[in-house]
Image 1: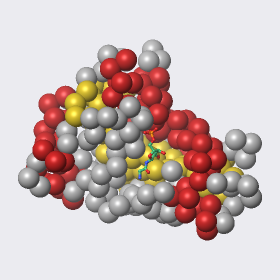
Image 2: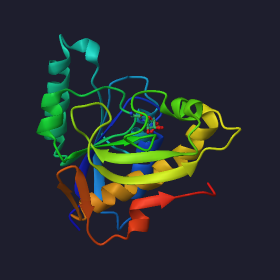
Image 3: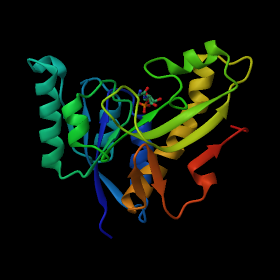
Length: 216
Ligand code: GAR
């Protein structure tokens, strides 16, 4: 089986990276992680990658004169790795327009809200403060604008009256770990097509694309 080579970009603990590592460890999974890049040398996810014998690289903004040069360094290293898909997994940096355009439809992100609601940081706290009854997570193709782009898959979770940002984050995170490998699998299987603002996925049911988890 020819596996899709992916690069994963992280900034922190890397639990979504771990979900991808675990998925890729399955013999039938159609993708493999060839490189993990962090923009922070203290990201816990780097240890997870090393544990799984995956190449790691730290590329820090402060080592470059401007953000474009930083993005160029990321781009060069990813290309060198042979990766054909880039997965942002808690990568807390807004990539520039050139990078986003160069990797258009080959760059995906996971975000802990039901986009287009709640963009930016601390979105679980925003959801609790707004009193929404449901929140969730989204895997989407990346466009240059913050937390924007065609949606591949979403999972929905309830927000309970006693929830705070931590309890809601934990409920959402469980679903992130399910939908991110799912999206990568679909892409690797060649079943995902972007048509305008929409993502069309062949051979899946609607239930697979919209996961509703009232019990979780
Ligand atoms: C995850 O909740 C991810 O959805 C979020 O950062 C967390 C990273 O956790 N990403 C964003 O907010 C991007 N806008 P992890 O390092 O354990 O995967």
